[in-house]
Length: 443
Image (cartoon, rainbow, N blue to C red):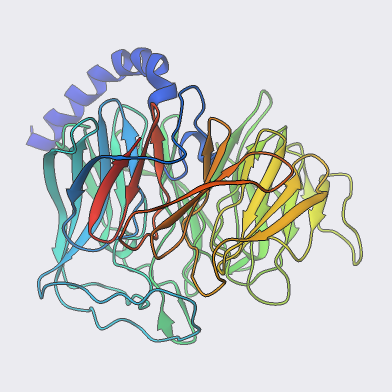
């Protein structure tokens, strides 16, 4: 029996115990991109407006992989270039150039102590030259890790799918081949993060030459089902969202020219919606009984509130803002890079040049739109919320703390003194920011 097989047996024996204990610590965990169910919200603990730094830990390499938290540990992914510091160009610009960063990389997973910032372990998942290009604003480690308290899953696109215990023991790895998400002849970099639900890992691999959605087994990595998306999606960087209800569980995949929902068990299509923006990046999520989807770039930048019982083609006719399955739609004020946020009764959507818009989450009525900063700074990290506060991070490292509500009220502006592209995590009253050079805990 191989070492990996013995590890899998030990892992299987521990599943029940971990499943029983995970529920008791759920409120302190931020297990994947945007936390619990991709909501971006963590309530139950006081959160700071003006803050102080609890700890600041250096991070090797370069990555936009956002922090995830389980128990007393924080995990991130990174790519370390063998040639030294990797190039990165942030800001508002339209250049289509690829980064000169095609040399050997080490794709790593780093684990830190949540309370002290001490590096607990460092694992190299793969060491090789990249199979796909990246844009100058992207990295070779854009995807956020995911955990369910039993395993820690990393998907680096072309560099493979890797499953570890939370202590850093490798359970299995899968090579899925090249996933080159490209446009204008340039590889822009893979960015969709893995989604865990039940016994499965969901991966959205929307490279133009072979777009697909796939479900893999958590226990051994074997493929359960795969659906081709060649007729519904030309490209996407969005993370798939799993919506569970009594009569069905669905996987919602943002895309262009269609947003599509699939049956979790079989991969069968359940509904589709004619899309708007041609570079889908935001992750779908749920709140107030709706599934919210947004995208941007191109002729439209819509945001939709979709009823989860949707079926068939639910596209809006010209001039429509709602129908049987679309509760409301705002066709031109959605989001391009950031995933919108629903907190309490309001939906917050941010543009990449720093305009924050607040809508009524149930009706779509616009309450305000407010520019953060000068309009010359980029905003790529998605907003997060808790304790009555919204946190909006600029690429230059300024964090705007805004009071939740239908009227704009800025509480304070903090600075991290380093660039920020990753979405922060929240756990037990502490925010964890991944900057270019550091992992920073503030309270």
